[in-house]
Image 1 (cartoon, helix red, strand yellow):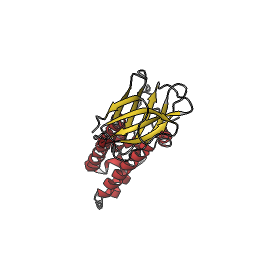
Image 2 (spheres, helix red, strand yellow; image 1 turned 135 degrees about the vertical axis):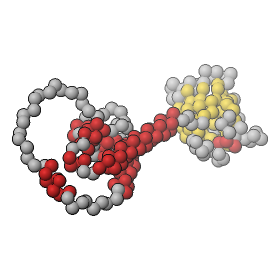
Image 3 (tube, one colour; image 1 turned 45 degrees about the horizontal axis):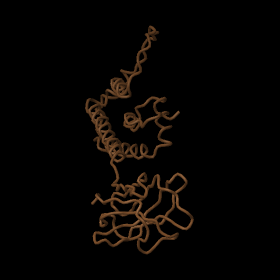
Image 4 (tube, one colour; image 1 turned 180 degrees about the vertical axis):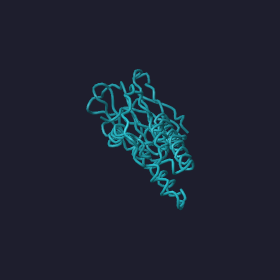
Length: 251
């Protein structure tokens, strides 16, 4: 079953191969449906590979083989007393316990230090990546609010702009539906008062519509925006009453 949130703290251990089978299965289930975590995991795996190659190769001393054989000599089997169940240890605790076994201890304190530094750096990188995602999700896009005129005081609209100001979408709410012979037209107003048509549209029975806006120039070069009632199909320049208007404060 995929875990409900991003397994940020488990990804470094997964890259190290230090998770138990249950934790690894949970992370893999999440990775199957989360592209963001798969991208983050690839970065960790790249760091793991680079650090592994950075460890210098050391020629073992001649007496090492005899010490290993002596250390692994069979001992009398003693049935251990059954101990009460203890809380499940973390992946880092299990890794450190494994490093204290004879086979791992031969690697020396340098290997332990490398693994600890690796785990620490991976956790830090994970937190930085998570913060970047949170900032990207909470960073608001530029918007322009259009208020209803005396003809439609209850109406409102929001023009949402892309971060670079090259694209926009208009969200309209509570604007009265028109008869079949008329339509609403969005105007992009330049500082000198000239107007470009941004869209011709109608609303549904609830007065709502969402549409993309056509802008011949970047939005920051327009001073204001307005919506008028025009004949069906639109007009080259405004001819009908103004129903929505707003100043451009995003520049």
